[in-house]
Image (cartoon, rainbow, N blue to C red; front, top):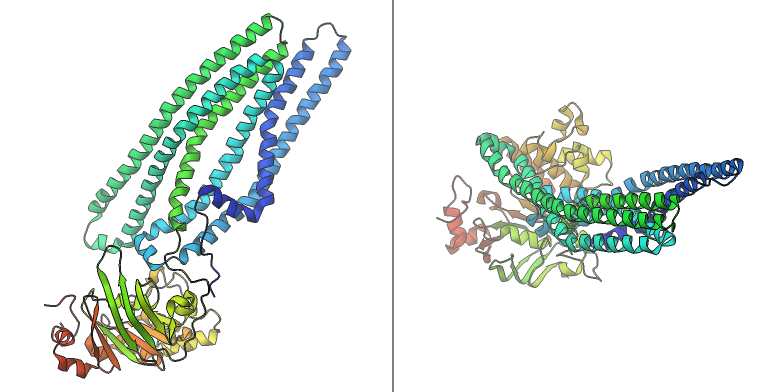
Length: 593
């Protein structure tokens, strides 16, 4: 049965809650510490007020004043040291908490993405997917850090300031409260615009990353066609979008900052006027005067800094929202009561299958065909006729619109995807390997295999002698996509992997058409062993490779138009005969003449 998560929250705060449930204690500890640290600003100013007031008590005995003053000075120093200690505790919890959280985010997102349908990977650039996974982890950290260290602390500073100002005189409270309400209202109103600018900017960045990855992937073509200048010019158009979107975002923030800065200047003027008025009327002490001015300026500076930091916050929210494309619901999912597929014979049946790609006419329209267990079947047709779609549907990389696909009388929609694919092995025309050791790539067919079984599989795939001739033998790295090895060597490693998997159904996208005759003979020998006692489907590009098949299925324009053996199909004079007669040097052309 599948145990991967079939759904995941796809909004910022729900996803934060989802990941924080693993670290609730640490997350709440950081939040509480931020509240305490934020409130310490007001306490700091209150202690300063006390010190100033006692310094200004002129009618008390000097010794008494000094004793009381010493007490408040000592308390002030202890308070400062306590806050320093709390900062250290905060940083310690953060360093223990955040790296683990980011690792959890990357792990869960990577696992979730792996189970997306084939269509998802066709519609999303590979570079973008990898970028979004790591960016989601980074953005979650930044959002949490900005919230706890900036937003929450500064809000606590503002609330504490309001409470203290109210305790000194109601006029201070009214003045500051009116300004704070106006300031926050303006910020909140324009936040949606800032968020939109940030979203556009982030989308442009992700697009550029995808274009760069695409270009690097095709660097051989760029060199062969001398298209460096063209590719640079092509990328410049997308870089221009980044530049424009960032300038638009920062220009809007600049205008917003000016408006908010003007409100701060007006508030300063009002607070100073009220302070002078109340001091003249002996309604406040000199300590109160210093406290109010200092607290107001400190709070305004903190709130002002918050606006600068809010642009970073919205940018990170925009970054994350771009990443939520990874967390869209799966297009292909197991049913709630899905069972494991049990293959006894390997019989495959397509019953009235209808399927179409997005915005296309039906590729298959009520198509039916039966492949008996242990049969070797060739799939032939011009390019785009439906051969690859047929095997993709058998693997349930897509869900069909109507009909049934059965394996040993079990509907593949009613079995788990993991059990389905564990019973099917696909050897593609272009074999791609992981940038890992040869041993690791072969072991991919069976992670529980022994060293002896790996060597046995390599020998049966006729690749063992080549592997041991390498400096590091089975521990040699294959390189990105297997580039350190030839095509024929990669093919045989893929075959060795398939031998270890030993699934009852085998699909081959004929891989020998572009190889030299010696390598082709070795691979055919390996395949003969691999195909023993299995149901085999071969997508044929050369009809000579399927002459002795038990059955040949002929595709044309999304329809199964003929089935039979080579000899019987040639006698019909239909599509298969056309394919046979149109071969160019033994290979089927892309299109009929």
